[in-house]
Length: 221
Image (cartoon, rainbow, N blue to C red; front, side, top):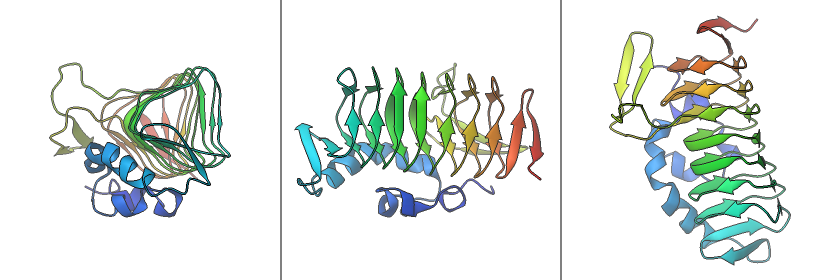
């Protein structure tokens, strides 16, 4: 299946998880080990650069965390990142540099590349968001199918069994997700693609595409 490998979606120079991700072919294969990865990385961080306010939580000294935010372990928050009012980081969150995790946004079991924004009322679970990807207000990743069966990645007539029950979305670098969109379990959006607001998205969206309401996909000119 084309355009869904880690090398297709991400520039690994923009995440602390680069070495870890090179061990996998498809991005969802990396979800299971995020917690252990964070703990391993955190133990090697320079205490002159990172605060360690609680067990297995590391926050760069230049990051801004609002007092009302909840930071669950394990978690690493990179340099220049802003964790805003009432953000809920449930744990297993590797958050890169210069990111925005916005008011009332919720994160769980994620790799967030550098310069990613989830700024307003977003839920991101069991997902990987590539460099400079952006989720509009109210857009969410749905990470469990309604029948609770394992997620299957679908690309047209092709399908790929993952053997995993919880997979959210994999957003390539520079992806833009419009406001109030739902990314269904196993959604993969290729680099430089845009999702129209209020879309209900499933399957594989090719790189350099525009996904319109109703599932119409056109190539960018």
